[in-house]
Length: 85
Image 1 (cartoon, rainbow, N blue to C red):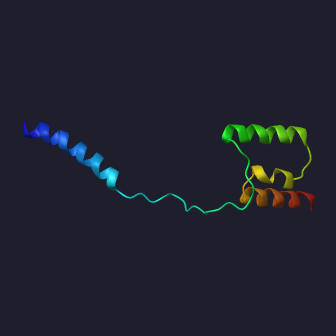
Image 2: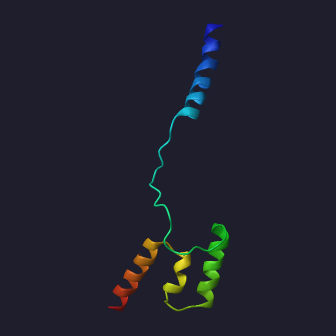
Image 3: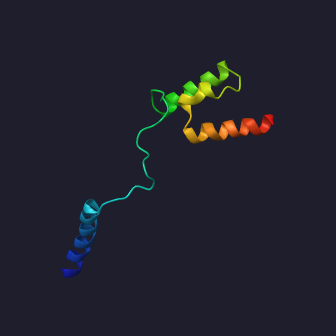
């Protein structure tokens, strides 16, 4: 009887300790976002992005700014400068 009670007690103790353990995030949130955002979930935003790219075939990255992160805009601008130089 003692063995079966211990088998039930250990998983319950682990579950209860997991509820009270503080968790640190994997990455630091940067707070406010600097650029404007597009409304909608990931699928809707992706669809709007692809629709815009099909309608406007140019290399103007500034018009795509609401769809892209700061780092991605910088990376794309650097790549376009290297290819044109």
